Length: 322
Ligand code: KIV
Image (tube, rainbow, N blue to C red; front, side):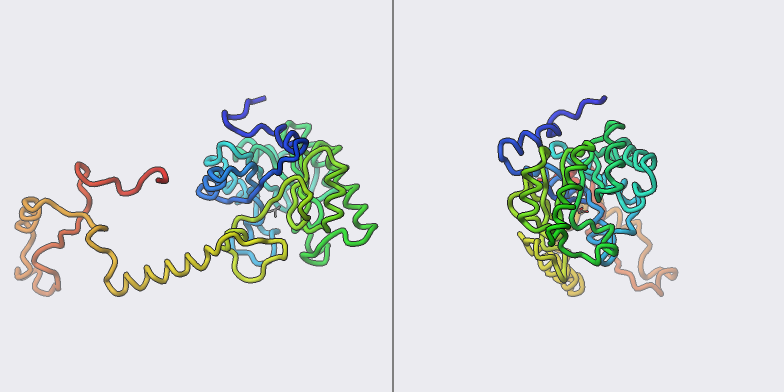
């Protein structure tokens, strides 16, 4: 079995955190900048969620269409950038429902091709044997019960789950079965707080809540929701910590206005040319009055704004953030 890269949060540490009563912080991310921001903020776990379908791929109100190829691509970009946080690849609809064998094959792809540290899959019931098979193949699995968006149609929409005593007991049983099958943690989504608290007490492995109250061992939110990149209706459980969509809109409108008015670019955004080179360049240029160019509406002197000289100019783009 390969050893995790140095600095990677060891998976068993999550159980220790639960025992110490230290909250586990998880967030979704879908690209390298998001992974770096999460890492620098000290986030413990990054989920490359199939919410990608809605928040980055443009599908409305469903996670079902996102494919294995898309999830592998996104997971790979996150795994490349995240050193310390555990990276969990979310198994999309269709990648584990058919059989245990198919689920293991696809989990291996997340682990081997995309560099995920673990996978997550939705549901209890038939998902329990999928979890057991994937864990037996040596890949850590995070479970997910409560509101499981891939089955939203069967659940009657994006609704709170476990609101009756019977349904709540069913959720507790499902979470226990996932733990017995080897899941290293279980996400509880849109579950009444007392039910989530009971599951958290009954499980040895950590629970990660989203709309499941404060007694879970950790919390997860969707990156775009918490940063205010998602526009329109948001579930009650989301807290916005920024309003980035407003900032992005303002910045893009400002840019468009400056390009149209000629205010951008300014001198500080342009590259110059040595006077003698410019002179030589100009003198070799066909004159605007030569018969060939008479019809053209070009200036006699070229603009001083030309490509950068490799000797003296700063790099076009820094390779790492400041
Ligand atoms: O896909 C996702 O982002 C998730 C979280 C909401 C837990 O499953």
